[in-house]
Length: 471
Ligand code: URP
Ligand code: ZN
Ligand code: ZN
Image 1 (cartoon, rainbow, N blue to C red):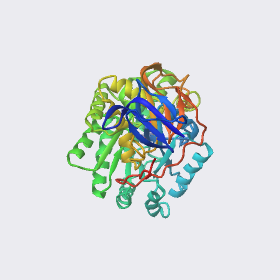
Image 2 (cartoon, protein in one colour):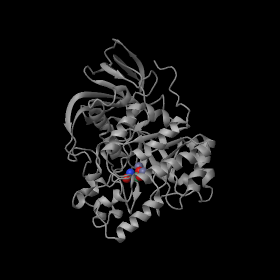
Image 3 (spheres, rainbow, N blue to C red):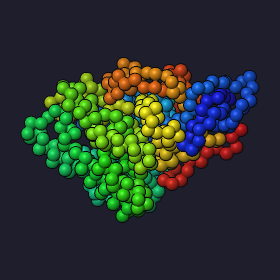
């Protein structure tokens, strides 16, 4: 079936112009002016709307164990929320459980995908928690051959998934050898562990102690350490969920030296203040995510870093828990509150509203941050992340004038709250296509679970070929 998306304002990371986009065989067949159609062509009128490459969210935690529970979205639920928000590819973390082989971790995630089929395309990173498991370093080197081309390591969460520097460095050496990108959750887990124990011993159990025991210096120190170790190993490095000036500083220094370092932030660090954790009762537990929300000066610095190119990507770190029964596990002890929050659905609307409408970002920069740059860094480009002839027809018709109010009552995630409750935003996805199939029409889901598929990503620095000979 041929589809013509007519007269929209096409935005890529490089350009913005009014054009038609012709979709055929799941790919973009042409981008041009007044493209002809026959009777069999479905026409989608995009006049007055933007036509954007589908979003790539490289940081999600789907059906992932934590603190004796698990994030409350499976791949069907997470992908439906993603699609309705204009994201057409998510990259999730296959988490190595204690004693588990890395291949088994990836297989476990394939099983989750098969059990709860997605409506968008899905890739996997691997989260390495143990390289001393028999054969692990060799196994790690094999994963890029399976399309898993990025390795995540946690420098925090002591006593569960945190790795020591030796493990981090060994993983970096493997990554340098096999062409993988190393991702780090950069916080000094040892110092945080001391601060948490001291706070609890003094009876400081409320949610705000989550932030007080994870001060910005713990993030800045770990970012700097990861950069230095990656430089030593010769590995490319990607710092996830940057939240503060202390973390931006070493990234800026590394960039000035021409080091292979990239970084992301997330909407919650751009929009939420540390004081949200002061709320009474369970309310404060909503904002227990890691790193914690920071100060206005940090948010200003993050917005500036997005505009100048110091930060490369806005991901969501979608890590949803229900307030009523999951966050409540820590109602009398902040260290027992599962860390994370829902967010996969509102990235594009929030960044358009506060970034573009707020005068902080150009539309093409928004596309770069949400689609093109993550596709490039994570081995999906040019098949995904742009609107080029031959690319997958993953696209969003985005109505910049549509007004809506974000609310848990209308969101699609299984979580029962939103970090952004009550915020009115301008702009919403109207139509979303994944490989040419309509997944969202007039803001509503129209695809069956199972349209989405696993994507094998290219090695770091390599491109994912697009089909030759598209009609
Ligand atoms: O609080 C968060 N971010 N939870 C998810 C795990 C992580 O650290 O990314
Ligand atoms: Zn993290
Ligand atoms: Zn995360």
